[in-house]
Figure 1 (cartoon, rainbow, N blue to C red):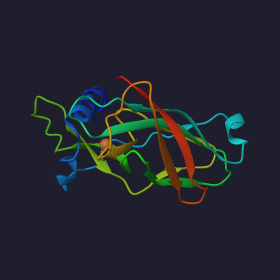
Figure 2: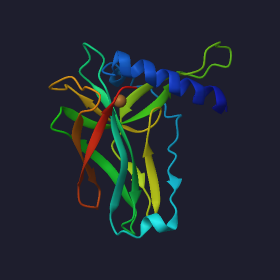
Figure 3: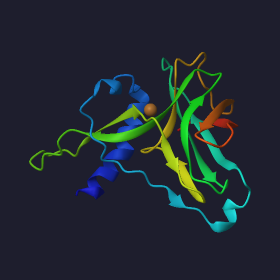
Figure 4: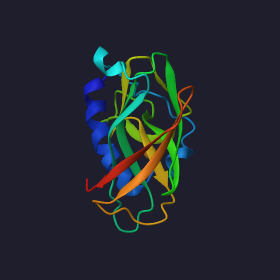
Length: 177
Ligand SMILES: [Cu+2]
């Protein structure tokens, strides 16, 4: 497994993908999920609130002419029960949960690493007591068809829907990135 090159490619690919948009990524039916979920274990003290705790929510400022962005945050499951992030919504545009995957065969003769693409994901597990990190190169909330450009310093609201826990609405700070 060529995990190191993939990790490097992830960062670069996402930066490119955000600029170029990812509307074409849905046309990759042969995409194989190589990027694996990394739900880091949360400190026990973070799981005593009895609820989903969202921290550090931010959205990427949109370059001129772009009508989509990605939103990142950490979600800690303090409900005491296994759960999953299943969908997202936002008054700013059309929101969905995305993952970053490697596409292609991973041909060892190829000089370049696997190509990265984004695609919708139906559900992201968040076991009890763990923290799911939505970050560049991994899971994120994608917002397409933005009604207005996002300027750094402004905010947007995003509502997360879980399999079991009640929905949570967070305010994401727009940052230049
Ligand atoms: Cu995306």
